[in-house]
Picture (tube, rainbow, N blue to C red):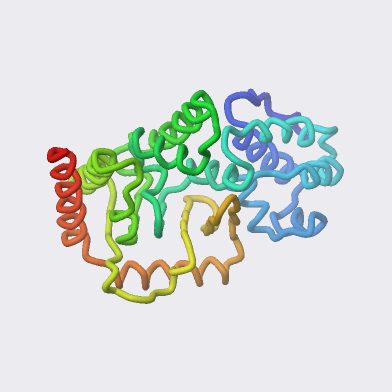
Amino acid sequence: MPGPKTLDPSSSPRALLGAELRHRREAADLSQDDLGAPLFVSGSFIGQLEAGTRRMQADQARRLDEVLGADGFFVRNCAALKQSKYPDHFAEAAEAETAAITIREYAPLLIPGLLQTEAYARAVFRGGLPTHPKEAIDELVATRLARAALLADPTTPLLWVVLDEAVLRRRSGGSAVMAEALQHVASLARRHRVIAQVMPFSAGAHMALEGQLKLMSFNDAPPLAYLQGLGTGQLQDDPATVRHYELTYDLVAASALSPQASLALLESVAEDYAHEDDQL
């Protein structure tokens, strides 16, 4: 059997573990299903680990070391995955986000993190963490803004968001902050970097009323759905469950305003906020 690859764990722990897992599995002449069985996970989950779209857990690392005779490699390097700058409930989703080729998100209350301006993000964090010191808020804001580096590529990932009208009307940070935040989303839409729609209040009830939904697809791994609540988050990979959420998103997008009408509303509301600020 060939020796393990020489990789730098500090460059990308998920990439290292995924590449090494695939290397050792193929060297052992095991399919993804074969390797998943003793871990009580599906073959598609093994594929997600290899693609770096799922986070390896400590108990899985121990079992992989045993099954693949890896001499503690996965346990040692799995520890690096714990060093995430994101909250535990979001860390795995944030890591998957960086590998996604498409991201579709329904946002019921806030502008999605990838589209937030610094002032808007600061207002959101300060509202949610009123007693945190300024330095802690600064770090959270910087981490959130860094995620937007995904949009530096002109085409990948494809980002498609549906904003509930409540997102536009909730004055997070005041009129000036809201004007800038909505203008930023509109600018990205005008440059064709994102697809943005607005779900108007007039649409009434719809399938995603109960909360935020993010869907991610990948070149070499099955799609994922991420659901987020107050201080909680769930990453779903069950195919039937993900298909249900894909249908949910499709119906939400079908009920929302068209991209052209949504852009007009975003710019109109942003202008109203800017006008309010001018009058103060």
